Length: 467
Ligand SMILES: *Cc1c(COP(=O)(O)O)cnc(C)c1O
Image 1 (tube, rainbow, N blue to C red):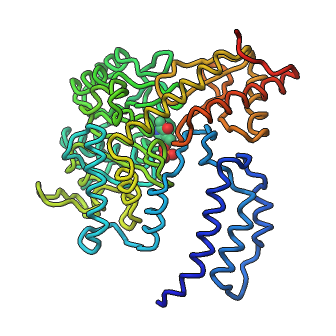
Image 2 (image 1 turned 90 degrees about the vertical axis):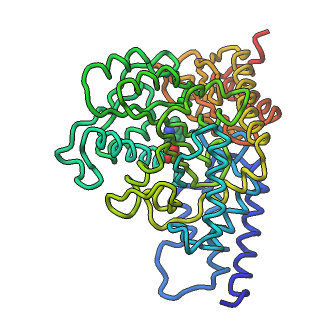
Image 3 (image 1 turned 90 degrees about the horizontal axis):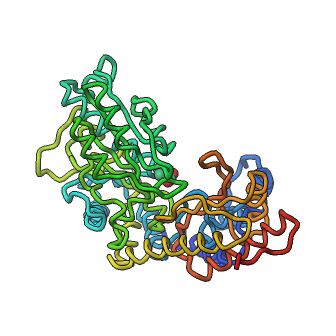
């Protein structure tokens, strides 16, 4: 393949990428064009004849641009969405250029080496058991699924049933339990794993699992059980009481899985580690690098303390238990066989930041969330509804209609973007601080954008602080 076959089209792609990246901080956040307009601009019919690659990319980038949302803006607070570090983005481009199928270790030693280091660094950084199996999956949904599959095999094995050999039909019933604030992706993962939705056992006002409720539910029956805990509730940011809940669950012989899509990163900060105290005693964990770590999509991480249980559930060989000490294959740790080398952008980000840089990143997000909460609390007519322990801030105006109007107006104004939602019976606007660029200046601009939007929906002068 001649070098120049790629040269021109890569230059076009790079120019558009740079223009996009340069525009993110100041462009209005919401997309200007809808799906139909973008389709029209692209042309809807499949052409009979081909077209030059550079022209294709030029057309693609030009037509899609009005339909792009500035999710990587420092003032984008919707869902839980990270931005992108330069090292992560550049590494991700190279992953595509290198095009290694990272399913098996032997043919791709370079990719395997980088991913194995990234995996070891993650365990070290998060303080999780160093012999855990780590899988680089698309996101926390697949990481939850991977953890639940390992859990399912393990608890059934203890009950004398080999699910990897005999399947689920006729197997002993598995009790699947979680707190009331369990994330919908754990529900989906449970459905895919044949466990059904979790039975919920209660939660406190912030969404942390009710440990007494868990103990009572576990005490009702004997037999295989899986408990899903949570590090970081999407609304409040609350963390479960890991030490308490894990002790109760392990006492009953249950497997404990932790969904920490964004909250697991508290473990990488010395000042926030208390939020996850005791979580290292769980059996499996799920997190996203595309959220808090600011790696581009898609980048989830599945972690299972008993690497053999992970391989038994996920390895391509049926009913396979690798020998102790044998190097695991990447496909032993993910539901896929073929996949891109997702661990490489993770490695590049961890190397660019270092241990201290990751801690500063997480601490900075939390500081900005507190800054937003203070600004909102000091605004007449706004109320912060959650205890801001991590990166999530839920705010409400006097009534639901006004709150929803505020969310719409904020997005129309284009300076900041947050998710309308419902929490504890009230309409809220939820701010998730997950972007590395959300600094004090971004917080200030966001607070004034919210005050202007509030004034606009009320038809009143801009409210300043309550003082
Ligand atoms: C985002 C999120 C998930 C799902 O993660 P994906 O990467 O979107 O699959 C699961 N749990 C929690 C708490 C989340 O915030």
